[in-house]
Image 1 (cartoon, rainbow, N blue to C red):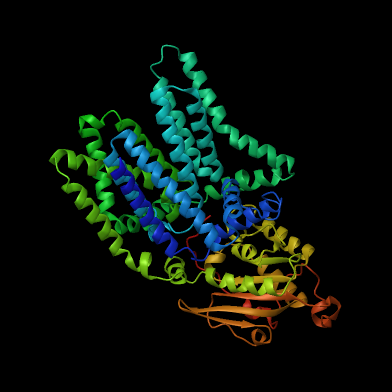
Image 2 (image 1 turned 180 degrees about the horizontal axis):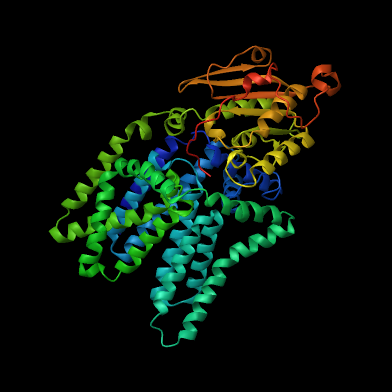
Length: 560
């Protein structure tokens, strides 16, 4: 047992050391959303009031807890991820041990530790999928324990944790269905169909309880209609955007690099699936493990977007199968050699990823993952705003960079912290643009950050362009340029502030432009003051016109 604990501890420490090396990697926009919403929750402001998006609020609450424990910083958030990942590694080990054997569990835990760190699944970022995995693994383990002990509290607690996984993000409903399917299968041969139906119904009630309580809290907070629109009405439109051919194209773009990065582990997982059904001593666990694999893959599929971090949900099942292959090989050959070969395989896989895992700085790793997205620049822009404004002012970001609100610790002047929805081919796009611009005008924020870059907009040929016309008229009338962060190349950004920014011409099409409200407003020139708020006239000669995209932006992948 001591050797087992030492091996598990070594796995945890190895994974933690890599994560600590990249602890300061800048937040990407999903993390920025979660961090800003969590920041607001800590201030007593409910989700969907100042910041709205299609995700359920579980991950917002998880971020709020992490920041309560460790502080409101990049390192604190990624330290929280480190602990969440460590707990998931332990749970994968416990599942493997309960289903198969201690060696299988240890091998599975080691595989998950390496797979979940991979750049191909954006494993260093605290996406919602890591929180889904933690809750779903804990629920699955309790479900197994209930199967053996038949103690009802274990079943209800399992259902509650599956429901908690759903609160992290809608696609985790697949794991709730997995739990119900397992319970229904167990009761299929029950002599009393009525009692079987009652047991499944009680499971469903327990699984629905976290969501029901969330709805009650949001209703009492006065934001339930906004919550429902964003997380169900609009989310349904968003999920229907992709056709089957779009989904197949996304899958073939995303999954091969994930396979290639840790190919040996995936080969082991495939072998484990075969051995699961071939070896007699594994057949009892084969239906459960195979069902877990199938439902884990289905959790990746909603919307057919197949983004990299969605595949984090598939990794525990793949790791368990790889653990089966390793332990089975050792049993078949009656030797410990397969374990040593497995350890060498893991080391070789990590060595192949050495540039990202060990050598790159956090900023370099960010560029490796996200190219010229303005995630490092958001830190400097927010620092400028924070240093030049009071905590009471409001700011706006015209673009999809909610991390700026978090870094600046300033409230948003609009609830639209993403502009993707404004560009999408869906019936609410133009209404969203009108509402966003109206909110900004009503709030009259002291600072506005305009984001130039395809990835922050995803304009399409049919996207409505009202917001760009509005800004070209409203901006010059009320704001002056005070800062530019121009991402000239992957390793160089030009920063210009105050007077130096006014005459700077961006060298690239990826930059952040910072504007400050003109004071007093009555001093605006006669020419610009005659422009009414909400005017859509294009001021081609204005200073702000230099900072507007005049061509449709190419499509690029994004992480909702």
